[in-house]
Image 1 (cartoon, rainbow, N blue to C red):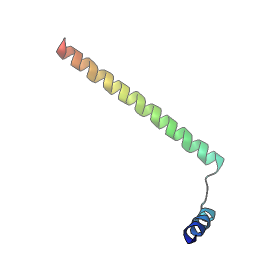
Image 2: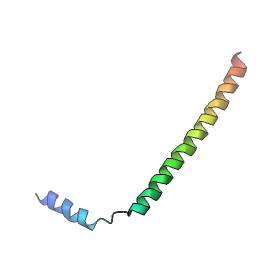
Image 3: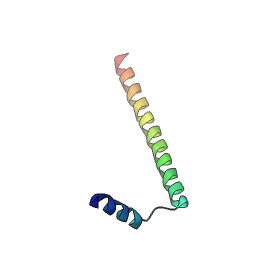
Image 4: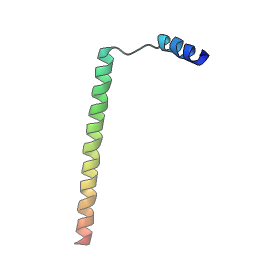
Length: 56
């Protein structure tokens, strides 16, 4: 029970982000994911082209 009480006390002390901060952070994560996906797709395509040039 002591643990549960301490958890509730700690949760009251937490400073939660505002809706604006949450939107900004979500946008940052989505854009970073898209950029990395494009980068890895391009690298994969280049490596694939190199292997095809050597194998065929």
